[in-house]
Length: 88
Image 1: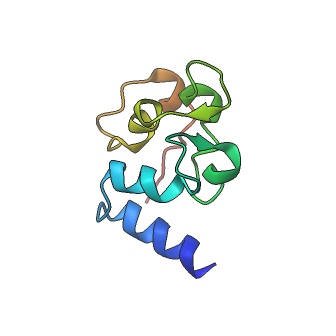
Image 2 (image 1 turned 90 degrees about the horizontal axis):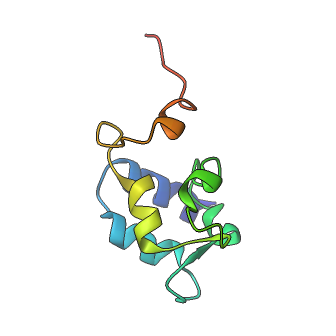
């Protein structure tokens, strides 16, 4: 649980680059993120079908880059439509 929390904090705070995060998530080093590996990063599995553009049930580093973009740079309407707006 501590590993999970640390990963979330570092990724959310942009301390880890997306390449570093990809490497951390790719536990077995096969250069793709499986669904099992993806469960350690909240939200990643939520958008799995949208991110896995070739439908091979794994995310390549290119596919992961789309998830890792800062939210103001993501230009995928399908993803944006699933993100609830927060009211403060």
